[in-house]
Amino acid sequence: MEYEKHLPIREAAVEGGRVRGIRGNNPGYTVFKGIPYAAPPVGELRWRRPRPVIPWEGVRVCDRFGPIAPQPNTDGDMMFGRDNYPPLEQSEDCLYLNVWTPAWSTAQKLPVFVSIHGGAFAVGAGSWTYFDGEAYCRQGVVSVTFNYRLGALGYLAHPELSARDELGISGNYGFYDQLAALKWVRENISAFGGDPDNVTIAGQSAGAGTVLAMTVSPLAEGLFKKGIVQSGFILGQHSNCNPPALREGEEYGVQFMRELGCASLDELLALPPEKLCFDEGMMVGRPFLPLSDGRAFTEGFYATLSAGRHRNATFLYGNTSEEMCMDPLHRKLMLDDAIAFARLQEALGRRTWLYCFSRRLPTPDNVGAAHAAELWYEYGTLNRSWMPFNGSDYQLSLNMVTYWANFMKHGDPNGDGLPRWRAYDSGDPQFMELNDNLGMRRLTQ
Image 1 (cartoon, rainbow, N blue to C red):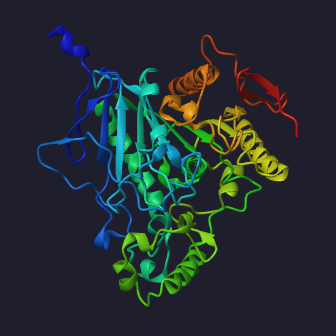
Image 2 (image 1 turned 180 degrees about the vertical axis):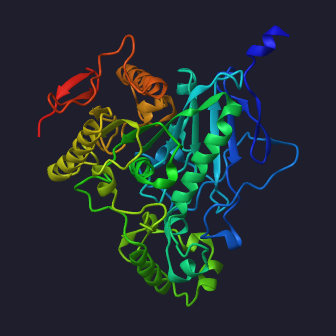
């Protein structure tokens, strides 16, 4: 019948089999929760790059989020942890993604938004409450979130792990998970009415670092067209967070194994995941991070950027005004990184839109416009939070969602009814201030 042509997509054929979603809060949208995008990295697959999805029979009902990656408990985090309590189920079997779609036909080719969660490469999940995708469904965008391996399970390198690997490398398992999720999107998102040739990736904090890592990695070719970097300074000229060399990571892995009292890789493999996840993924004074393994990354990130060898993409790039109440020097370095990136892009004829989020969060401990404070506004999930947001907050959120969606659709955040957002111009450097009084501000250094 004619009306059936406009019914929401409720089932889709993807790698592994068929999946069935559920109605969103708006019954015209469909949410697919917990779609596997790789084989479970358990047993002998712990500390190996992700393997293909294991097929299933019949229709897989995707009505609940998959387990999140093993990680320390974040209940004590007043700002972020309180919105995600009680804690979600954790398991090494964590490689799942989620899709929100407003489409009624696979022929629609809607823009696609892939969100990469932050959390210092040690905590977080694509199913945390503020990553809900329905605000973008209202804008005609298909949204995707996903989990990836974290901490030691995601980034441990060790000589024994390198020796058993067919390429002679180890570490970066979380990054290879992220690549696998983006490849899954490229191959499968058309089944949800999404356009695989119009993918925007976005992330905050460590997720922002991942967006920039994807920009310099030779393995991410063809996986996205646009990037959104939020509260991100990990790859800048002034940052000391260029990826350590594989050998350095392996040396740290040896020390890590020693600290755990393990004499061999077999003993380490026998440990339960909770023994490997503590202190936000830190051990012997250092976090687990991506490594320069000669495959995912072949040189320093800034060297790739400054030479113009990074992905040809358009970017929206910004920070908050207080960034975890960092001292003025750190805030300046973060701003300098953003400006340096925008200048590199400009020199290559590529556009970058800069922003500063300065809205102070309504928290009793007065965190202000803290690190990653824009998340609730960007995703239109203020009503999912414990914080007492008001009408001005909701208006700012609507404006931000609209800017972000315009960027995803057209590579330009501007649209009817919004203050004009100018791309970065070194001759007259300005940025968009995101607060009650939206508008361009001159950049001073």
